[in-house]
Image (tube, rainbow, N blue to C red; front, side):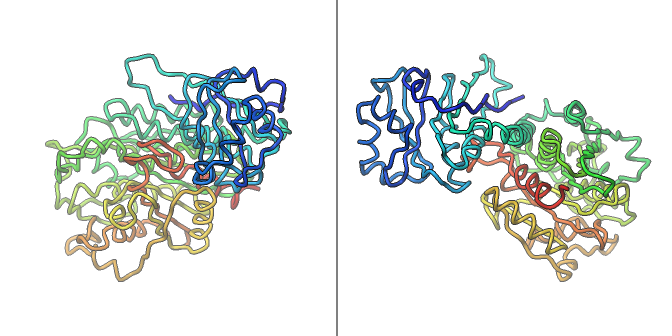
Length: 488
């Protein structure tokens, strides 16, 4: 399990700067103005900081970017990172500066000279989010990153914010680790066990196994996993931090590996289907964050854990299955399996918990990547208020999200001649017809959002807060949504 870098706030001490080991980082305003700590460091370096601040290279740097001065004389530190950052940056600028520092992290310690920088806490969060390296399956000894100490004028105030920040980073890392795991390690049983372990944080965790799912009538979910030796499961995580009010619900698709079933995927790129449990991974990360920061709200997270494999017992194209709700589904394509998992779990969540609202997350369609690329998740909703609240939270956390259209005219594309509906439409509007399918399992009086995160859960290049690979997208936005809209 990957844990965030050891980070703390300490009081600014000008006399200690020269003797700090490892790496130093100092902020210089866009104007080139140096604060008290930068002036002290500049004197120690015989004017090197000021000379760099007067250079064209500094002028060309983006706000939040850095340049490294290596093996400087006058200090013990082996390098000095000069960050272009005004004393009162925006939250995003402060985080960007932290991300820039996080990219440089190695075994050596880092001291950040932040002084009276506004949003020093967000700079710290940026460091924690970016200093991530999943090493669980490397034969060599895992690299332990050096500790980070941020020198600030008021360390007690910043330290008071640190617990909540670390909870966010822990939740994001939990999601990234889950998404990064190979399917032979993260089986449905192992996934459930890792979620069960969250009880140590105060979550109530319940694992529903196949006999219970059969009794409940979760036939569409079970149809996805029936070709696999791994047992299908539903895990329910409850956080009761509020009063007597009904909870808000998160529902996640947890397909630990997706071959496409009988509708077999092409071999090229199939190895990436270890991330098809990304929706469940985000739900798990959010629930961990809420528990760690002791959120004052009632929230329930439900994930459907299955493996989609071809075998003599696998669901066939053309099979008709009755959902827990009672609607029948003609399965045209067994590679459109995520919506079958979500259908039953969505209905179960509403029947059991009567939630104030539901957000489901899934790496659901390749079509959303065609439409939005890897910059934004697709947002589909039956409720403008909830949708706008989520979009505001996502924007505040700089996690890309874009609202997509829905409407009854798309329903004809999933109309079945033999059953109540079929699980896919044609090539056109593939993400929308998937959302229309899910909406049939959402009660009319339940505010609901479907987040299609196929393009943002795991990517081939660095993102705003993460190295290439699993991103943890959504944990911060959903945590903020709960904080802003549902905490008392």
